[in-house]
Image 1 (cartoon, rainbow, N blue to C red):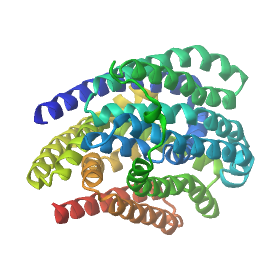
Image 2: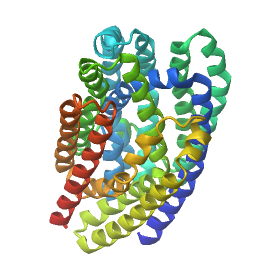
Image 3: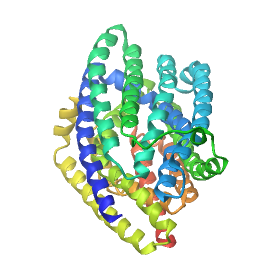
Image 4: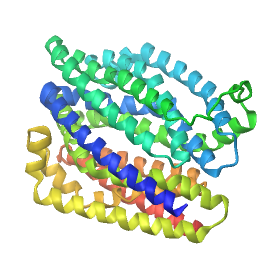
Length: 428
């Protein structure tokens, strides 16, 4: 188990590094082609995208990974038992998004240009769901190479498609360019799915019995996925309403909608992605950690869980501190290198210290999920998000502009990290 965990973590970190470098090229290409206006529009509909993905995936990948890791079930039956759930949810969400796209854009997001990007989002959801389901099987088996290879090829595909389509569609307007940026996911996720399917073991023969949904498995899957999904939906709903609340209260405070949209785009399109760019290290660590913790928890080995958590936290803190120092010393360099701008530097410098704690959250979340504390995880995240929005509302009249959002983000990270750690300490 120890050898497999180390091998899985190293594979994910190396793969994540390559994927992030490719992702960096995507950001550079995208920001230069569609510009600040395009980034601002994309940032405006990103919470909608996040909410839709949260609902359609229903945390089923986490359920599959956890059950496969426990090594008690028919893995093929687990996967096929999730398919009917996934298909039904995708159909409902797609229809809902298409029918409500105009209302969401005009009445909530206050930007009619969001209509077609929201429709584009709906079309990508089934492809994202399918690739995430098969990917979770390999996570449960701690076989990370298929995930890494599929991710790398997916990113290369995305780069090629962006280079081909975005320069052409930008000539037809920002809306077309943003729609193309979203629809690229259909092809890249399909290719990722095909690669993952190829990596399935030769003995992975599918029988009629495997295809038939297992009621017991469905119950176990839902017992894991529903608490996680509730938490993610709550997070995504609040994230969805975040720009709406910002727009409402800051316009009432005297700020123009154009100023708010632009500054929000700078924070969500430049600052946050830059700070979280190296987060693939801790995400890789947490993806390797979840099946290991699930296995140890099923055997009641609390000592091993504590040891793995301690190791993960030390590595994560080291990464977070390194990021803080590098970005603190060279903020202009990295903003110029990636986004060809120095906009957002002041926001970046304010957020850096608190994001050290952000880097230890993925391992903490993985442990909470592995020891069946998903309900507590939901409560923590809900408390953090409510406090974030309250901070935004309360400080909106202090004439500090979008620093009200910066303050809300900081409080959210501090509170949720503390609650995660406190719960784990009590449990193990």
